[in-house]
Each structure stands twice: as C-alpha cells, then as structure tokens.
Length: 333
Image (cartoon, rainbow, N blue to C red; front, side, top):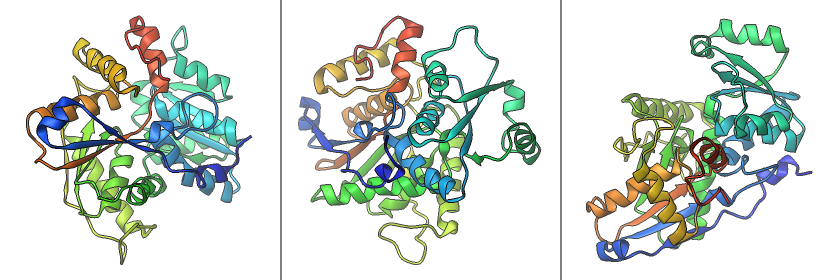
C-alpha cells in the first residue's frame, strides 16, 4: 500500500513535444506536461491535478489527526473519484456529498467511489448550493461527526501550493522557460497555482469547461487568497505578487460543463490516433481543441514555446462512453 510520502517523492511527470505540419508552419513549439501519467492508488482517478491538489490536503488531514475526508461534487466528478481513491490508498474514511437525486443505476464514477468505500449522500440541487454556508456544514458535522473538509473540486490554498510544483518541475526539465502556459479550468485551483508559480515570466491561459463570465473572478480570488496566506511561493520573495500576465480564453467550452459536440469528439479521436495521448471530453479535450484553433488563427507569435498541462481526468472517459455508446477510441488508457 502506498504511503503519503509517495505524493511528495516521485519522478516528475514527463514533458513531450508534439509535431504536426500546423505547428511547423506556424513556427511554434507545443509541449505537453503529462500529469495524466502521475498516478497512484486504484484506477485512473488519483492522477494529474487531483494528485497535486490533494497531496498537501491529505498531509494536513493526517497531521491534524483526522481520519475522515468529506467533499462535494456532481455525479461524474473527477474530484469525487479522486478523493475516494485517496481514501482507499491512504486509509481515510471518505464521504461524498453528491449534487442531485441518487440515480437508479450508478454511473462508473459513482460505482468506483462506492467500491473504494466512499459513503455517498445525495442532496437536491437547491440544498447543494448551500454547501459553503456554516449552517449547512454544521448539519453535516451533526450527521457524520468530525471530518476534514475538502471544497468542491479541491480548490483551496493547499491545492494551489501543490500545483506550484508543476512550474518547479518544468523549470528543471526544460532549458528554455515556455512563453505560454495553458491548462483547462474547472474550479480554478490548478490555473491559480500555475499563475502564482510563473510569476509574470510568461503568459498563462486558462480554457474553462464552464460557461459564464464568473471564471476570471473565481481564479483571481484564488490567486489573491493564496498570496495573502503566505504559503510557499516558488521563485518569489515577500509572499509573491499578484500576476496580471494571464487570461481566460472563454470560447471553447462547447456549451458549458460536460457539453460536447461531434466535432469535439472527432478532434479527440484524431488527436489520440496521431499522438497516442488520451484526452477527456470535459476538460483536456476542450483545452487542446482550443489550443489548435488558436495556433491555426495565428494567436501565438512565431518561435513561441507553448506548454499545455494535461491535468488527467481520464476516469471520466468510461462514463462518457457508457452513456454515449463508446464514441471515444482511447478508452482512457
């Protein structure tokens, strides 16, 4: 059985360069930080940005003597699956508060969570929206007893601290610091970590899976909160500075969270056949689709070095294929 030290002492995830005629013609390089290969525990769930975001939280829970983790998510949540996997791997009890009514037949994500020993509790969407309020959390404590609380998506200051390691690793792996850093955005913790670690040395671009103008404000709040917290800041002094060299690219959400089109699926399948890198339909598929669209449009100047962070999320492919008839050829491997 792995120990928590596994999450802190590991080889860096590899960086791979993609080669296409489009990239050659535009005179840019596209590198992929393969955090999807950073995996431990059962299945494909505790990998990528979930590894990064949970490592310091799990250590904090253990240091506080907590043996139970409680968190929130939707029925197909990567975060729910990751917390369940972490619980089984590192001997924590886990409780998942799930948005919506219990479905008649559990999808692969919820089946996996239950198989890992996670206790699932279902709340109506209106109740679920109250999850950050003190009264709601006090009710949960009365129901379940003491627990270590993880926010939906795992985005808190300790999660951002874990994502700083992405930048530190890349600095050790590459001779030239990338001019552009790109990642998908859900709850914003991974992007906030990259923004903080890059420290205005490059442009950072976030590609949201969510539809709405709130994403930029959410990320800005996380970056500011981390700066105030005084936690570890790579390559900075005096607690760091608020990075303004970043932007949200809002044009590739395909209608919102978990929405997709045949065009997106076709791109993902072609990408897998050409580069042998699986993408998920909620996050990384939209990231790479958007990136290639921007490259084709000439968004990146010649000689740009673009680094895309593959955040994982591959556990979601099984549920997508089960729901929509095996459309994705990668299967998550």
